[in-house]
Image (cartoon, rainbow, N blue to C red):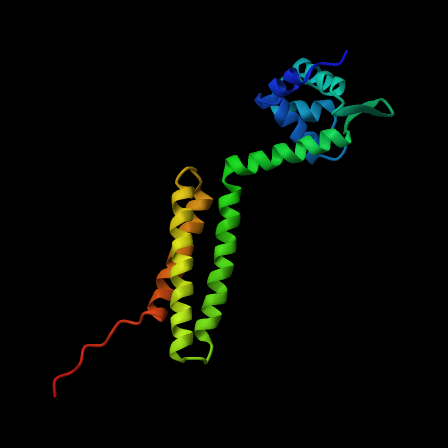
Length: 180
């Protein structure tokens, strides 16, 4: 008996159905007992969830000998990809990706600084690029504060160290003139 869309939305606002669908997406030929362990729930609860998913057209049950396994439909795969994307947003993976891109920008700037071109125009362009990157780092730091993630904190501190080093190359400390 098909269920309405409201029930489907309600199902995926719960933890266990999401874990089961994501595990079915991630695993090759997931058996019910494996999905049960992945979601840390009972066999009966897992089969009820799978039955609902089957009625929504998200999965089909396939048999191989005596063993039954779960196979995602096209819609099920699409929903699993969407849930994985939401999971990434909630885990801070987007911030880590932005930090990775920032590291690449720092790499390019560092290569540029090490180049032999030392004219005033190039120096100004490097300084401008450095301050743009520093601004991006500050914004990412504010965004990262929402997550309690050791990997984000580590990436932020590593990036900050590199920026501090580059700042010494962009704006070298002025020497104090000697009295003669």
